Length: 604
Image 1 (cartoon, rainbow, N blue to C red):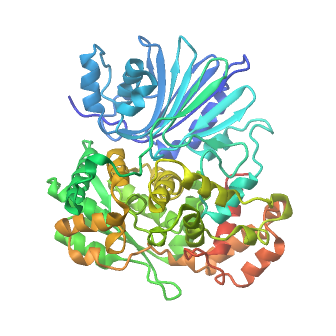
Image 2 (cartoon, rainbow, N blue to C red):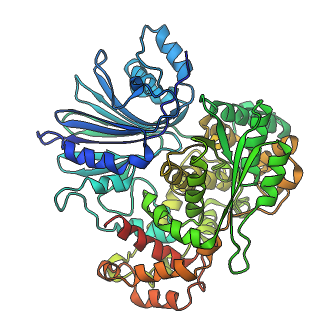
Image 3 (cartoon, helix red, strand yellow):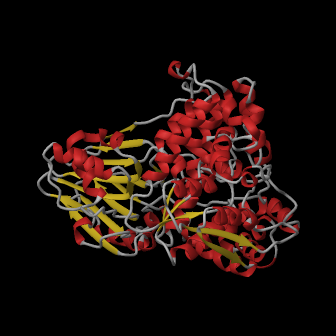
């Protein structure tokens, strides 16, 4: 049997609870908005009050058997799915043992049959990244699910009598027929999060009041009458376990190395080459080293670099070259000139499901564009810093109490505190309380994390990671029909790392366990280098065309009518565009400008 992976996709749909038929025209409009996520085909299905739409990116075997929406008339089930299930062949064999007969070679069908057999518990059997929606013909029930670490997105807009869902927020906006369809007003709490927390808006909120997102590791079951329940089905435990009490540092290294090997191996499930996005840092270099040890030869690797601006270097080719040479990869250096960067900004903003200020966004967009010209699947190193404590704000949390840890985390990570917020947003968006600090405090005080470092790692891997690095990779790679797989977010690996004593992760300047594993596999100069932050100089240092875009957006009629920010604050920033940086060296003017550019790009 040929292995058959359906590849990445975009899904959408509508469910009605008011007695009327689903609006297939609205679903068709959403499907059109998802074309870049699935350039190879489309499908739609409706049954009275429910309609599904789908765009398909075929990675292998273009037969129509795997087309979506996938309908199984015998079981009375219909599904749309975006993602990749790495253990689908094992699950298929298990289900065949239970008497199920398959009509395709796709992982979508494994989810359908698995759902019929295990019910909603199918999610606990799936290794992979996924968002899926299943409709039961006989009961009218609809089930929505999102993978454990939120690698694949699922956006929702609910009005009385109706629920719509899509892989991107802009697709939901595209479905708007008559006015008042979606409340596109700015959610003041989400705005507070955006301006405080590095543009991270924790689920279920988004920047728009009328759009929500299904949180990671969450199932939502909606009955035919519209009543629904949500259940979080997975959590990593950030506590030490008795069975590991006798483990040495070396035991932890060996166990984590093996889990990482399995994670990388799982993500090779494809009949086409799987490349690697190689930044030259520890994480992506380790992936290359492990793949080489798995017997991958002539591995395609890709690095990107930018022109230096304002005295800041824009590439790290010297490190990626070391790895490419050591493992004899088919290496591609992609150089980007500053004017290309400005030109690419419009596309990147259009591809953002939510506004993202991270400098990497445009870099990832350009990288994905070039990479997609020669390959369809890549592995990428996202998640290692959040899972193995690679950031500078973790060490100061060791040996402090939980309350002090909350303050220290906020001081290191938040872009501005609540007091400063009053001088930024206009009165109509000003809040008396501080929802961002409250969110961190509440999350860090939940049971299941032993120390303050454990609590911060849990917060970052369940919230910040999902709505910054992971979303960035999904949005930018999918905009070019490129499938990006993230082995550091294999849930078995994440569970093991969560139990690992924090001091082993904090060792050696952070990511101690990974560095120890790295020393066995990759050249030391890549491990002992200063930590890189993938600088995109033209966005850190605003000048020229990029500054012009920001200035135009913030002084436009649309921005004045929206009135998010205090005009005097905007004037101050524009007078000295590079004068105000956040603790993480982000540009405060860029934050404001990007939000306004995103809202205007998406017709809000």
